[in-house]
Length: 229
Image: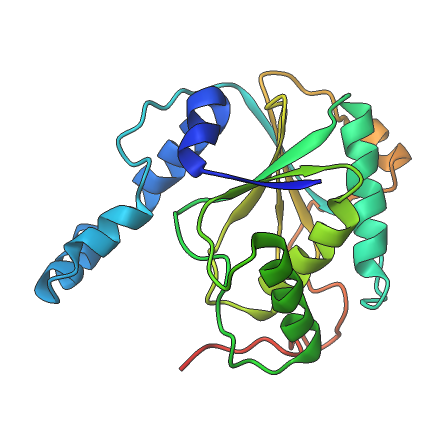
C-alpha cells in the first residue's frame, strides 16, 4: 500500500527525519533568493518550501556510503533496484519506507517532456495521488515498493525540475536512502553502522570509493533528461 501523509505528520512523529530536513533546509536557505521572491511580492512562496527551516535539529553519528548495483541494463534496472532495497529493509528489519523531499515542492515537474518513461511515471504518480500536483510525503510498504521505485527512478533521472533530493527513510529511522540520476544509491545510517561493506557486498552492492558515473551510458548523456524552459 502507498499512503499519502502530510509532511508535518511525519516530522512530528519521526524526530530523526524532522531533524534531517531541518539541517538540509538550513543549508539551502539563501537570503539573496528570498529577496528575489520579495521583489516579486511572492515571499510566502519561498517560506512554503522551507517548511522545517526553524525546526530543531540534532547531530546523530552517521555512516555514509555511495552504492552501485553493478547493473547497466536500464530496462530492467528498477526491478533490480527494488529487489536490493527490499534486501536492505530485511537486513535492518524494517517494513516500510517514508518518501519525502528536502523542500516542500511538487513531486510533479515538467509535464511537457514527452520522453515515454517519464510520461508513464507521471501518469502512474497521478493515479497514486489522485491529482496532478502533490507536495507532501508518502509511506510505501514492501509490496508496493517496486511500483513506486519505477516512478521515482524516471522522475529523478529525467526531470531536473523536481526536488534535488527525494529521500527514502525506513520507518524506524535507521537509514536514509537517496537515489541519484546516475542510478546510484546514497546511504546514510544513523547512530550505528549495521550495513558494513561485507554485508552490503552480500546484498549485491559495491561501495563507490571514487567519482560517480552514469550506469547506463558511456558518454554521460542522460536520454530524456530535459530542463524546462
